Length: 504
Ligand SMILES: [Zn+2]
Image (tube, rainbow, N blue to C red; front, side):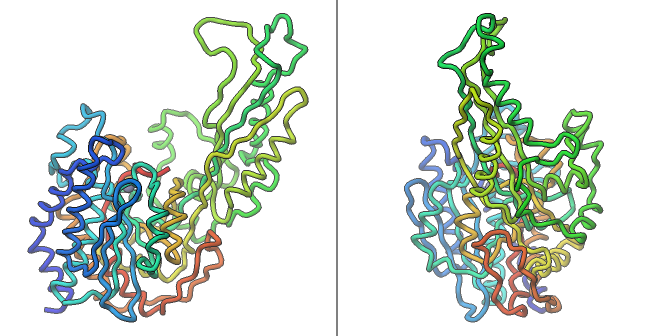
């Protein structure tokens, strides 16, 4: 038996046991936002630490933070080989509304080959796959072809307020060549997906003020500038209604253009625009000349009014000329747009449009950089081959429209890039909504584990020199490990499912 066969056999032999272990993990209601369940969150942390030890990690630590602890685990006995850092989170979202669950959220139940429980797909299920992958390697071959570091936090669902401090404090322990995050969605059922880009975010509040106080429109209407109208005009001027383009000078300056190869691959994805409109209940979509839906949501920046408040909004009528108007706006950003620079651009545009008679106050609320790993990077190519070997289906390389600003800033600062991949159906998420569980099929997860384990056992993965010129952020560095070494990384690049929860 070669090592691929023996790992496969090991996985098969342990399938039921591992499923029972995942169930144990899922029964712990580690809801990070609920102070009454802090002890449960802690229990999940300890449970995970034990499992990392059991898997063969020779360093396992529980790092205290100002909130819930970070669990660190490492196996570093492959000198000279690259180090892969696996990021995950052991906390979950609250289970409410409980009445939408067919079975209790913390009592894992298998139906139709899917495992239903809070956290089964975000993120306990997939993070546990990585733990077991390491264990399978160590127990069958006595070693793993790559060094592996686990960084598992307990506060992802509350915005990761303490991951920055933990990473900074332990930076020397977290050195790695690549970061793997298994916390995104799969494009469609049965379609293995690798996400190589996320959008960034810039969020602002605009307050426009006119007269000292609200006025009577009968006495003052026609003589005083209305802040609601002024703000509405300013906002409306931010988009060209004919082309759909954002009409803020300089807004697109740093946008990295989509490549023909990307557009070609995306055009072959199973995406039905009519169905999409139907699901949303709209008869038409916002257009941007020259870009289809996937391109607009994955690779183009946006301008959105998230909220607008002014004047009288109660029952009945009141002829008020309001003194104030407020809007919250946000921009999703793509590589290489910088949130601060974009907020400068937007602010100066809005100031130039502010009419005499009202004042504009701008508050910058949050910003996060976009992330893009060059599509032709050797790591992505190798990941694709590994995925294909495991699934028997060619993976798709996709971007996502969402953002994880804090994670980007602090976790990705550890390594050249992130590779994220996952296996949950977007349709499943849509059908079940946020409060519902997604799946881990027992057979699928075992297959995934084994495919991950097998990845480095096939023929060596050819790699090509990367062209990292489009790396998204200034903090992105270029892979320096030798291409031949990178082939073996994919032993660990395996993952299952996730939910949309947790993304900004
Ligand atoms: Zn998550």
